[in-house]
Length: 556
Ligand code: GLC
Image 1 (tube, helix red, strand yellow):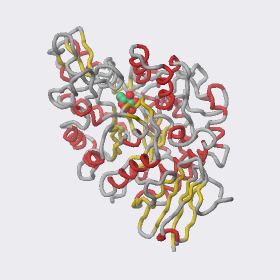
Image 2 (image 1 turned 60 degrees about the vertical axis):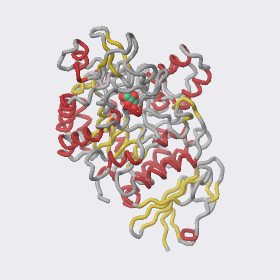
Image 3 (image 1 turned 120 degrees about the horizontal axis):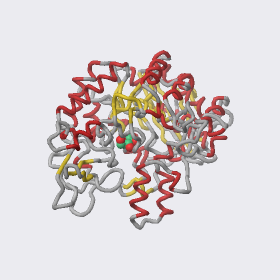
Image 4 (image 1 turned 90 degrees about the vertical axis):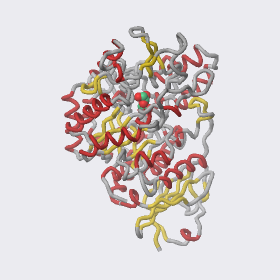
């Protein structure tokens, strides 16, 4: 397998709104990030993925872009952005920009033109259709943010498609002019020196011609008609040929609903499309009936089953991205670990998983502190459009029980990950001197960067060790993966092998002790503990303590 910098990198995602506010308006900004570059360098990460900082009315916190060439007022100026890029490059880090091109904001100039008349040159930049049978939307697709995916527009008497909010009209990728406009914009940023893109819902850009209904009655999911659509690979290859191939950049596509087979098409080395995708299968292990908000307990067998499938599926070709949370997902320690008594060991155990599976690890801001989910008791405290629209549809207009829905929001809501970074135990956790745009998690007095950095056993220090170790040990990056225990209820164990080097990783995912029974091949070998999340004192070879993680070098 070819060695490349983006396989060896550890990526850190910044959600700028919630990272660090420099001017006291309660919203994180670019100068805030600049002030924390030394922190990021100390952690040891190589690449920063910056969630969108472009001009935006913030219907979906920047994922609704009104100008791709300008910086959002609340975040600063292009000068600030250049300072950030330079500051990263000076420290040997790289910058990955978020590329949101499945849709724009309805306040984008293209959309203003497009909606103005049916024969405007920009009309076909978006997806317009006449209504069906008088006043019905063109088809029954459901928006990811509740309700129909179509909105009627008075000016021209037609509907436009929006898979997300009605302020996020979908772009028409079948129009070559639109594609050229996107490539020009990408080139603009690449020429400024950015090191790659994380591509927002990039597998939704090609819709099945005719836009057929999904099922007969009421709203249908629609995804078979726009996920991994008929021309998506053609468009990505064209983008690669015309833009990406001219630069040494990293690309990761966000691809909900992608299978291993499909992922190989996006990431296969000879395909010349993308380098990695974010798959979602392991994010669905606690969703009942395909509904995110129907929370069911996950099991280790299910979670490992999915991770194992992806490890083996992309072993020979393609490349995995490794993540357990981001700005769209609850905090990993609350979801897959334990955010009470075992918060610290379980956060470290999950970190061990992320850095020892084969693929590129993605850390989401605050994860390195073991930050946890939030539970607001009132819907008023939530800010996320997905949560608010869902609550409106199911509780206010439907007859769902508000208590049940609030519980689901506590477990799954995106705002879990969007409460501000907890920098210290001072006012507003050191995030802002003003009024934070969303409430801060009250546990900041205990969980914060300052505390974490002054404690040699903290989650932060453990991440630092893992990241440093990945740089010194190619086996962590390139070693072959092999599963050791089939369907274990508590332990996920596997080896990584590169030439003569064998590492064995054992992770206890439960809050009780677990017996680690290895087969003859490994039980007879000598071992040296390389990394562990418990003191060696009291360590028993075959017994893992609650959430214990061990990384051994095996030898004879
Ligand atoms: C992606 C983003 C998410 C956003 C959506 C629409 O899933 O990660 O935050 O709401 O796309 O742009």
